[in-house]
Length: 304
Image (tube, rainbow, N blue to C red; front, top):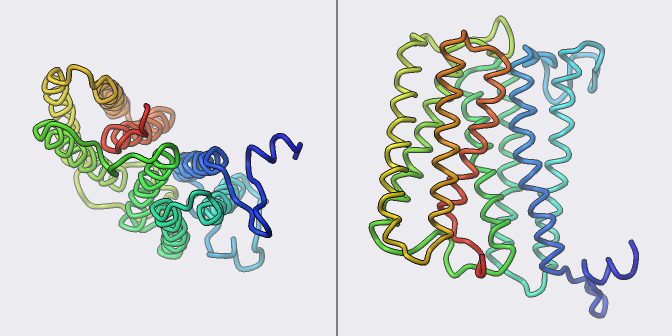
């Protein structure tokens, strides 16, 4: 690393290496990005029918730890190996949080939360494989991924100029409406995982599915999405009271766009027989929606 870049990244005080705010923010952003990408790579395992491409865990199969002999094993193995990238990024976040100056205990706690979450995901991933893609385990795998993304988002947001609070503050009615939107959005994502665990694209032809009627769970999910959109619109109307708070208004608008887009894709995939391409777009949209929820709920850095 050139001397100029090294000075911007870190410096040595005596025998202790200290990390700059800018360097730590870069690592936190990398962790957030890798945790988002692995949601999509995991979805590709399911959508390509590669869920049991490696039928054992932590080995790929009884004879090989790593096996890329078929398309399914290659896809599943690639997703497992990318877990290593995620693990390195969160470990780096923990290490740099301890060396960052000034030391911030909130960042240390949040970074350790990522490590614990990734460890939990590794275990849940093993359970998914060893139980033959159990739908409850699959749901947990996706939902814990969203919790990790939220954790990483808060870490990234707070790694800049420290906000005074973790979550957005302001007029009590606005804050209450934001909380309702967060809860409704989370419920919409949960009901979406139930639809996924009921419908096609389970990851393997022999995978167990929920015995619900797909039409019924899809209707429940669509109602939860419509309620969420209505609450966001209500919040937007309330936000007109915020004369100078453009940050909150922009966050509401971004969330509304994400929710409407996600709802439109959801209806399109349902009425077109749930094609793989639209399901993939829907998964990207779900991640984008959760980003927008976090952007609305989490306090912005000072100066943003």
